[in-house]
Amino acid sequence: MAEVLRLEGIRKSYNVGTPVETEVLHGIDLSIQSGDFLALMGPSGSGKSTLLNIIGLLDRPTAGKLVIDGHDTGALGDAALTKLRGQTIGFVFQYHYLISAFTALENVMMPMLVDRGHPDDEMQARAAALIDRVGLSRWANNSASNMSGGQQQRVAIARALAMNPNLVLADEPTGNLDTHSAEAVFALMREINRERGTTFLMVTHNPGLAERCDRIIEVVDGKVA
Amino acid sequence: MKRWLPFEWIAAVRFLLDGALQTLVIVGGIAIGVGVIVFMSAMLSGLQANFIKRVLTSQPHIQLVPPDQVARPLRDEAGTFEAATVQRPTQRLISINQWPKIRAEMQTRPDVINAAATASGSALALRGDASRAITLNGIEPDIYFKIVKVPDYMVAGDSQITTEGILIGTELARDLGAVLGDKIIVNTPIAGSRILTINGIFDLGNKGANQRTTFVRLRNAQSMLGLIGGVTSIDLTVNDIYNADVIAKEIQAMLPVKAESWISTNAQFFTAVQAQQNSNTLIRLFVGLSVAFGIAAVLIVSVIQRSKDIGILRAMGTRREQILRMFLIQGGLLAFVGALIGSALGALALIMWHRYARQVDGSELFPLILETRLFVMASVLATATGIAAAIAPALRAARLDPVVAIRG
Ligand SMILES: Nc1ncnc2c1ncn2[C@@H]1O[C@H](COP(=O)(O)OP(=O)(O)OP(=O)(O)O)[C@@H](O)[C@H]1O
Ligand SMILES: [Mg+2]
Image (cartoon, rainbow over all chains, first blue to last red; front, side):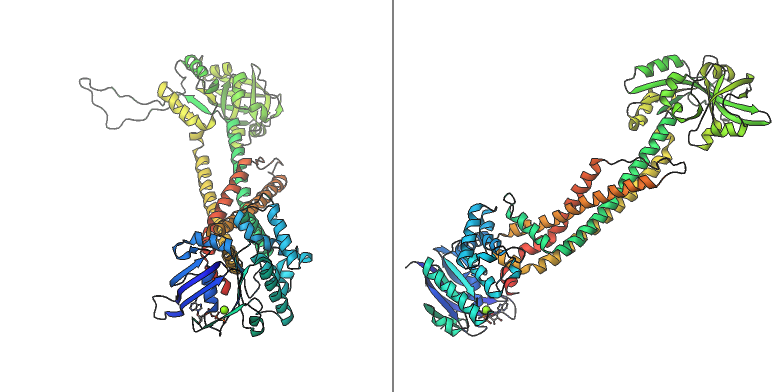
């Protein structure tokens, strides 16, 4: 299996250079293989979101090496990181962050639109297919603000898949949902993982869901336990 | 989504439509500001045009008169001393030297359209017990009426002047109790009394002018004023009225005459226009500033409100420049739409004002001048202001750290 991601000695400190400088991640080594479905667990404040943001190229580590798809990201500038992020990583956040000014379908089109600059038929068709895949065809033209939490999260999953990324990062995607919706969202991710071989890294506090993942990575006090 | 629109435009329009109330309020504010500017500017240029039209149909663009007469004491002769003070001579009524030659020369100039010779002087108009001081203008009607549009101002009779006829103003007619066809006595020191028939009565729209100005045939005036064969002024119209000053200077430098342009004789008007324009500029500047601050304030709020959207857009690969452009476009769009509505409002207000605000005599207060240029300028300037005002909020949005925005 190909390696999607490799972390070597990743450290992250906040407030660098000030008296309140604190190191949150103390040297994390991690390797994720293509097609993995991983749970990232750990107590609150242990640094899970921090780690996910670094992996997702939203934040830079203070030290260490992060290799994504064979690219050593430490050497890349801001623009290159943005491009790599758009093309290889999909995000699903806890608070189903759809853009309320757009419809569900348009939200799914958005990553492709951002990448190509202009709308076209192909991206519209692809977005419609993804919406269909997450079972929301009937809601495609609804504004994001008119949908339930579970529905929004399913749209967010469809959106995360829009650019056909190797890796989907999900930070507590079910954390804000009732058990029933949480189960549906988790099941959807798992199915997509099996169907398409998309790699998932999911932060969760739910041991029941974590057990059903391929592997559980425990983060305790900024280290992989 | 519109196929032809790029991502930044689509997002900008959607964000504006999504915050409809905010958008509406700020567009309303911009529209009022632009409307006021458009209304004010158009009315001002209307009033100005009106004044200029009035001035230029009742006086020549350039008037050539004999140079001032100065005292030239004899000196350097044995036994003569120059007096300590030289008394200024009285300005006698004298003719322009070699005026036919000067006029011919004027007529050959490409920038001069008409040149009319006129003999003017003071006289006394008498009828019954009434007597009034008047200015007797001896004219060649054919050419002169092309310069001063007396025929347009006739209220009685017509502008044909017979050999023993005279045109007088409404005020003089009232003062003398005379009507069309009446005879009046015109008295000059040199020729004594002459009886002239009133051929027509005019209203130049100015009481003083209506009281004093009279027109007779050039030959009549010449004989009555003791200027046989002479003229006191040559009146010109030129092709470019705003260049009259320059042309006048040129003529004066070339010929032994004094040349006065309408610009120098109406200097006060131009000072007033300048002052008006200065205050106008100041008003525009402040309206522009408040529009800019309004747009900036709305967009700053919008950046804060949409920080999560911006964070998520950044997370899915949106570049900083795209976010920057998105907000600059919003600023420009707000201002542009506001300017369009404002231009329409301003034009509407102008049309209403033009219809209902009238002079005492019911004629229009100012001509309705709706120049495309004004609207284009207003829209372009407003849009530029909007984009400029959006710079700070747009930079703020572009610099937003997606991690912070998403953690929110
Ligand atoms: N921008 C920041 N500046 C300073 N400290 C921060 C910042 N972001 C996070 N931290 C700190 O880093 C630590 C790890 O935070 P992080 O959000 O990664 O934890 P987490 O494991 O995701 O917790 P939770 O399960 O509650 O989401 C916490 O102590 C937090 O206070
Ligand atoms: Mg977290």
